[in-house]
Image (tube, rainbow, N blue to C red; front, side, top):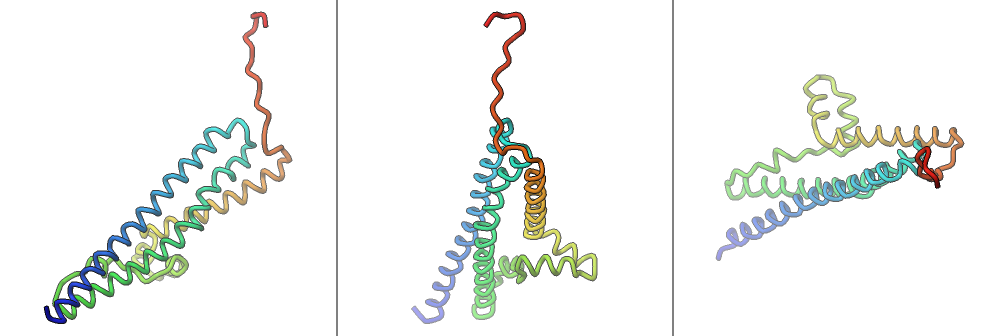
Length: 180
């Protein structure tokens, strides 16, 4: 086996493993999100009669905010590093072995979350703005920015209300006219 064939096999193996890693990263991100969304919904469903309303919103948002900071941001960064490597391998294979791989090359985007949001707000043309806004990363960051604002606002309202965090569960009402 000649050196070029060996290199091709090694690059192919790296490409396959990097593609699997990329897919697994984003599958993990959204699987964890679905679990933590269920936890947040559980807080809303089962805590609504026991927790003060403003505090309930804050408590229900904690799993989602936890996901954003500890799962989405680090894994998204890792996913983009894998995507960059896949694009590099495609360029290398295309130039060295005359292939026409371009899925990850066209899909790769060099912007970080912060840079993408900054570029969207500095866009001079509608097309540039639309390109940034339609990316999932922009929508996720915008949603979580608004969620942070909502939680802070609800914390302030909860603190100002001076109501206790937990409410006593009301005893069930007895029907009128029945002896107890």
